[in-house]
Image (cartoon, rainbow, N blue to C red; front, side, top):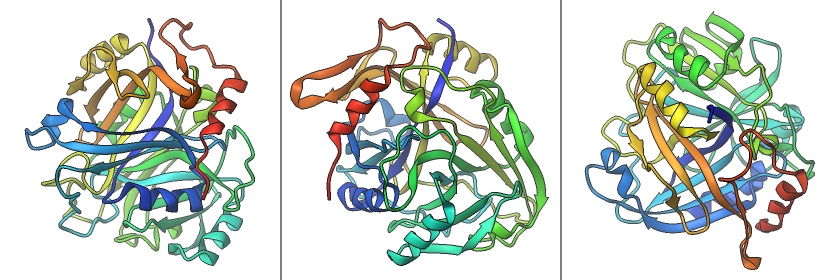
Length: 355
């Protein structure tokens, strides 16, 4: 089977309290569809958890507006540790999660009126689009951007959908590009500029000179959930003036406080593995067969970008549509690249959590 990148499935977020922060995400992003919620151990991740099996609870949540979801992840065997330093623009790793909006100015007003911490003001990106940054209660930074590729209008008062990409700090953009352009398929350069930027003004070290390159994918994503996950963009940022950049997860575990991984829904894991190895990004974790998360299952793997940022791949084999009725989607025998019918994707909306 050929490799198919179906879209960003989710952004993994390590938190100290899943339920508390998820309520905030429902309020401000409308990410209110529970796909699964499970407590278990993570034996395959010992490479990144101090050589010990750690226990955790995790919730995967989506928005019917479209976009990738959140895997909200909390250690139950140890405290969730914060970075021992102030994370700044240019530090290496997943720095910002991009969230799409139908009306960025209206979203900005909603965030202000509802007490969210906004970094800076409503601003304009290098390609002329409105944008702003906001922090969640744990200090994670989100970039609200003009949305593309909506699945359904839920009339959420924030005007937001779900994950539209990410901003990643890298030490050398040229070394990072083969992974993000060739393997992940973000081949189109929307802009590539160096300087100081209006929209970065409210970020820590946002007044420092950086190179930033925004990448998108030219072709529409294929696969079972591609219509729901929608189009995404990745922005790589390299500090030019700072000489003290460091990894966001220095001396910490995968699963600790912050954005822990960027996860792609894929098909053709064997072909992907061969390509990653050939291009210098071998799998560092591989479940090899179907992993079982109780309500969902599939095969998952991890690679690292040149600065150690964790990228996850999931080939989904089973996912619940309506658990109470025993209704699951089984994907192993479906034709690769084929979209699920829209009515099945819409049915996932029955798992909405109401506040």
